[in-house]
Image 1: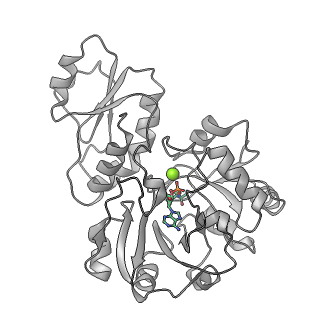
Image 2: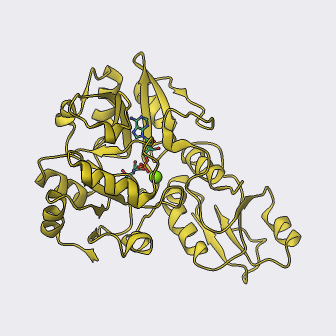
Amino acid sequence: MITSDLNQVKTALISGDIIALPTETVYGLAANIYLDSALEKVFKLKKRPSYNPLIIHISNASILEQVAKNIPAKARELANIFWPGPLTLVLEKQDQIPDRITAGKPTVAVRVPNHPIALQLLKSLNFPLAAPSANPSGSLSPTLAEHVAQYFKEEINFILDGGPCSRGIESTIIGFENDDPILYRHGAISIEEIKKVIGPIKIKNQNGKNPSAPGMLSRHYAPKTQLKIYEDLSLALMQDLDKKIGVLSFKKNKKIKNEIPQEILSISGDLKEASKNLYAALHRLDQMNLDLIITSFFPEKDLGKTINDRLKRALKL
Ligand code: TXA
Ligand code: MG
């Protein structure tokens, strides 16, 4: 059920139920981090492999020490600037953080979400929430309560409605190796913005078999419909005349005829607006029973890097 009743949701979480929660990035599937049976439900519902750890959400940077220790100075600087907000820090875990959350790793991923409803809920609870994105493993992340309902209507009792997610794409994940910052996942905060605060940062190639953020295993963030990337979309349309094709474009592409379904992510060509609209547009295209969705790479700068990362992972191999 889609609801805006915070009290009901709070009671459900305390009693070990899992609920869907709005954040500024994407909706999450939330559970009390200290209730193993609730965490188990999250893994089961998402069909998430047990080696892929969960992100913890806390209400305030001042309680970070409850979940993490030996926090590098640069992590604190980033938290000061970007929290509440779409930045996840991977830090050494406190002893009481259950292994189920961290998949046995010595580190924990944590952030303070910047959504009034999520913050209100977190402040009313005396435990943090584990909340991976509220989608089955590998599929498109939800940016509306309705997207979550399409995936899990039968399985979860409460989907807390917070409207469309204002950032619309997952948080940027940063970890540390010997106190040196490393980018684990491109996200809603661009690498350029991060560098302005802490200087140079290493970018870990997450395409191998053993990525430092286990969720970055190759195929992910994918629509059900096949997606292909082309340099010239109008040429691509001519190649596959017998197929029902939808187009995902950055700005308006005048060469695409009006009768072809087209999702334009930002008429003014703004990468932040485009990243906000990406998943909702892919969800809509996915509902159209198309044979193929075609798109082009976005400019490889700012949030264009995050969009391109998701597009690459969405390709069917
Ligand atoms: O914006 C977001 O981060 C959203 C909202 C709901 O907060 N959450 C989200 O969760 O995207 P999820 O589980 O879909 O992606 C979290 C990523 C996964 O790739 C996971 O492997 C990685 O974070 N992760 C979690 N704990 C980690 C750890 N200890 N070390 C490295 N990576 C970790
Ligand atoms: Mg996810």
